[in-house]
Length: 113
Length: 114
Image (cartoon, rainbow over all chains, first blue to last red; front, side, top):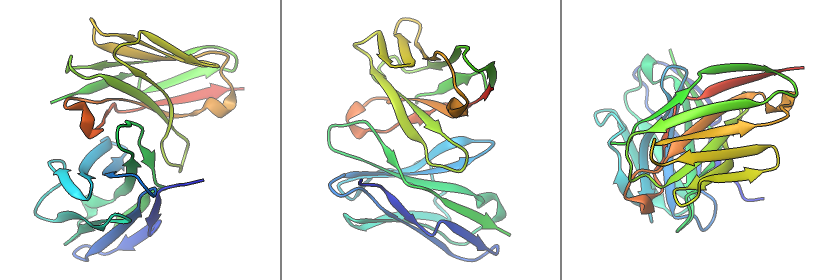
């Protein structure tokens, strides 16, 4: 049963620290999405990639967030420096060519103190 | 850009009753409309979807209807069960549709009381 995986599952850090979240998409999927979920904002699209190239990162605060795909099996989302307002659950999702269905990972729960 | 509005934000029904959640979208060129279910502490999972060339789709106790003219689509759950309790998200794919990008509604928390 192929699934998207994310690490870490939980992260507690102090304001100002760097945070890196990792995602392994389903093998063969060529589109990767990063979402942030909060009670107030629901599911916000931060960035997404097709064939490892960034297609859109307009949902991401550029000054502190960055997203990359070093290779087809790894996507990363980095926050530097982190702030308390970044506290949320960050989901990664992947999708295949020609299909619209997105398969979500278990999420990383980030708490910035 | 595309904007998706979802109502109601919370819905409480008695087991066995039906539940209906409605979404409206702004971009008439959007052509794919999925519904995701998210149980507490879990990941969102696709439960049903519909494309713009279809008016209705059913899968056992769940169905989705689409009104392209009015730019709204709805999720219908019949004979609700306690395990249907979750947050439900609608979404729309704005053009260009080949990106797979989804814009989500704000979610509806459904509670099914036994």
